[in-house]
Image (cartoon, rainbow, N blue to C red; front, side):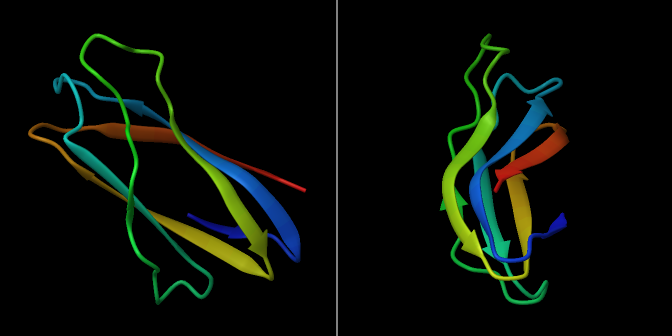
Length: 91
């Protein structure tokens, strides 16, 4: 998703997920862009564990945004995963 945030501070990004059939996601990678074309280095984020259903994907301390910011989420699992409820906290 691409968010419009003119000269704003972004505190965190949160994504809710349903792992479905998978007990846990093997890997979840997150990268950011300001123009929608070139993405930065992917960061691996701990997503969840087996039988723990109340964990969220949370990327803290995103930083200052000049105009726009976009995020790319890449999940590697053995079965389908549903991602929903993407939200950012900014000022």
